Length: 232
Image (cartoon, rainbow, N blue to C red; front, side):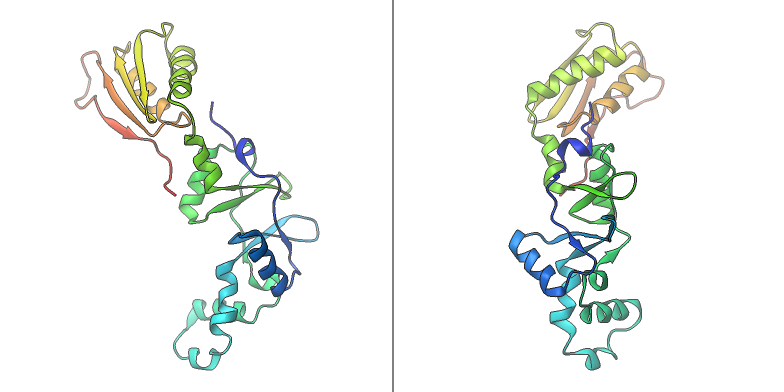
C-alpha cells in the first residue's frame, strides 16, 4: 500500500503570520534551525513561504542599491530590491506556494519537491488551511523498511492479491531494497505489469527483472528498472 502524506507529515508546524516583522522571522528561523516555513493569512490559510534566501537581500543589497541599478536589471533586480526593502513576511515571502493534500501519496509529494526544487511542502486541507508539513526526510523515510517487509508486501499484496492465484508462481528476493523477480508469468503483459507495480512499492530501490517470459511478442523482455523516486 502506498503511504500517504498524512502518514509521514509533521503536524507540529512552525509558521508566521503575513504581518510578522523581519526581526521576528529571523529570530524564528534561528531558534528552530529551519531554512523556511509557511506564511499564513488572517484565516490561517497558506499564502506563501518565507525562507533564508528571501531574507538575504536585506543584508547583501540594502547598502548597494545605487551601484546595483546599472548591473542588475529586469525581473531579478525588481524582486531583489523589493526583498531588500521588505519589513514583513508579506513583503519577503514567495507567493503561490507549492502545497500538497494529506491524501496524496508520498511518491507524489516527492515528485513535487523534485520538480519545484524545494525541501518541504506545506500540507493543506480542502480549504487551504495548514495542517502539517512534509520534508525530504519524511519522504525518504519510505525507504526505511526491512527487506522482509518489502518482500511480504510484494508477494501477498501485489503478486497474489492483484495478479496471480499462486504466490509460489514467482520467486521474490529482496536485498538492500533491490528486488529480484524470478519465475514464469502467465503472459508477457502480466509479467511486465508486475514489474511496473513492484517499482512503486514503498522501500523499493530497484527492480531486477529475471522473469522467464513466454515466447515474446517483442524483443527485449528482460530489463532492470530503478525505482522512480526523486533524489535528495
